[in-house]
Structures are given as structure tokens and as C-alpha cells.
Image 1: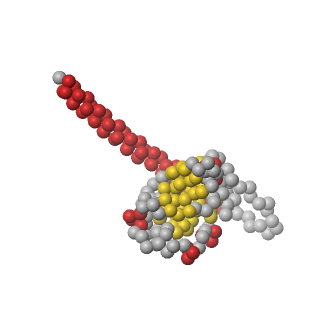
Image 2: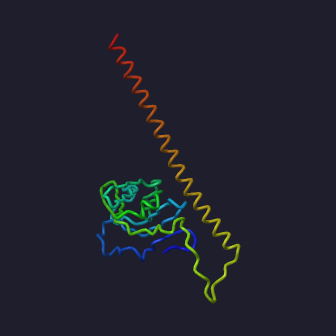
Length: 197
């Protein structure tokens, strides 16, 4: 149900009822699309892992299949998935890729899959025009609107900071791997030089 400002959220009532599913399968409780710009956004998901130890499950991978059958996999932005209240994960993804997928699901390391509902990304930058005011419409104070804008801006900044932290961590891992490979190459070159001598 898109709001008039920045988010498209599928509420729990729109998701399949957990009683109809396997009681040991993961359950999806919240699907939230937050557009960060006209082309991309953050897909946030939250749910439960009944009958499983959340600490051993890890964050699921988002898998999308387009009309040609091509699979696209996205890892979660951060591994804050397991917790006492279930799992949660966020994915930075292009709106066209998510909206154009014919199938979308989450996949855990143990192979467990959970189908995702359609996500409405058609609102572009996440904003939809406000409906025309009706008689008796409630008027909000400018201070309230300013506070809400500030909260949204803070939320977007936190999401960007998490994305930047993940990128820095990935860069650090790549730099360590390059150093390891350089040492390995130097050791092999030295061994080859010794063998030739």
C-alpha cells in the first residue's frame, strides 16, 4: 500500500497466511520498497523462522528470474538477518530489475526457498501524487510535516551509510585478497628462480 510520500509497503494482511504454509518454512511478515532515486531503491524484508535457530540461518539471498529465464542473485546489504524477533534483510536493487522479474524468491544457505509477492516499483522515485483534498480533510501542521521529512531523510542517510559500510568492507576484503595473491605470486617466482639456478 503506497504512502503519499516515499514508500511502498505490502502489509502482513496482503501476504499469504502462515497457517497455509509448511510450519517449518520461513514466514514473510513485511515487504517494503523504499525508492532511493528514480532508478533504484532498497527492498526491505522481515519475517520469522519457525522451528529453526535464527543464529545458524544467516541472511537469505534475493533471487530474481526475468522473462528470458536469466537469474539474478543479490546478497543482503548487511547480515543483521537473525534475531530474537525473526529475520530481516535489505537489498539494494534497480527498480526495473525487481519490477520486471517474473519470479522472485529468497534462498537461504541450506537451500530453503521462500517466494516473494509482487512488489510495486512503478512509482519511480517512490512518490505518488497526493489525492485531491476531500471535504473535512485533516490539515497537518507544517512542523509535523517537517519532522516527517527529516525522519525520511535520516532513514535514507542510514540506508546509504549501511551501503557505504558494506562497500568499504568488500573493498577491504578485496585488498587483503590482492595482498595474499601478490605474496603467493612472489613465492612462486622465487621458487621458480631457485629451480632454474
